[in-house]
Amino acid sequence: EDQVTQSPEALRLQEGESSSLNCSYTVSGLRGLFWYRQDPGKGPEFLFTLYSAGEEKEKERLKATLTKKESFLHITAPKPEDSATYLCAVLGGATNKLIFGTGTLLAVQP
Amino acid sequence: NAGVTQTPKFRVLKTGQSMTLLCAQDMNHEYMYWYRQDPGMGLRLIHYSVGEGTTAKGEVPDGYNVSRLKKQNFLLGLESAAPSQTSVYFCASSYSGLEQFFGPGTRLTVL
Image 1: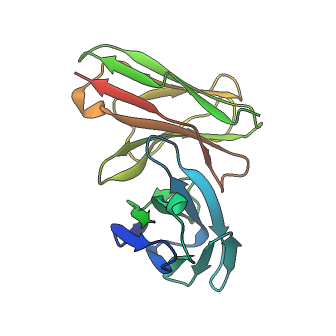
Image 2 (image 1 turned 60 degrees about the vertical axis):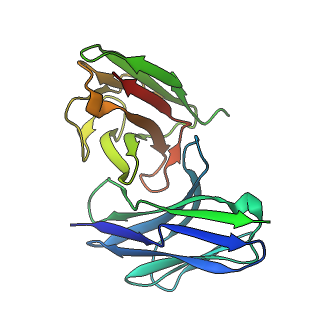
C-alpha cells in the first residue's frame, strides 16, 4: 500500500536558521513526488515535482531533493513569510490518486 | 485566469439535508479531483474525473456523488449529510494527471 510519512509534525525556527523537512514514502513505481505549501484557511499551493532519485529543484529559499525512499525540503535562511504547512504527496504505479502526508507545520519567528 | 474556484466558501447543514459543491476551472484541464481535509488525517481523495463525462471513486467515496457534465466543472453532491462529513473540501485540477492545482476550499459543518 502506498504511504507517505512526514516529519517532524511541527518545527519552530528562528529567522535565518536553516533546516530540513522530511518526507518518507513507500510506493509501487514512483511517477512523481510533489511538495505543496498550505497557508491557514487556503488551498495547497504547488511548489515542486520530483520524478527520479537524485533530482533536485529550487525556488527562492527552498530546495527539494529526492532519494529512492525519501525526499527532503531544505529551507535556507527562512523568513517569517515562509511559515506555513508543507505537504508532501506521491503518485505511483498506474493509479491516478495522489497520496498525501499529514504535513509539517513550520513557524519562523523574527 | 481565475484558476480553480469553489462555491460556496462556507456552508452549515443539518443532518439529512442535501447540497452540491461546485468546482470550476478555466485552465482547460482534463483531470479534476475532490478531496476532504480533516485534522491529523491529511488530504483524502473522494472522487475524481479523467475527462468530461467520466468519474471514478477515490479513497473515501461513501456518502458522496459527483458529476462532470462539462469539462470545466466538477460537482460534488451530498444526498443526506451526516456529522462525519463535517470537513474542509478542496477541488483540484490537472492537465496531465501529475501536478494538481487546488481551489480555495469549502468549509462545511453538518449539525
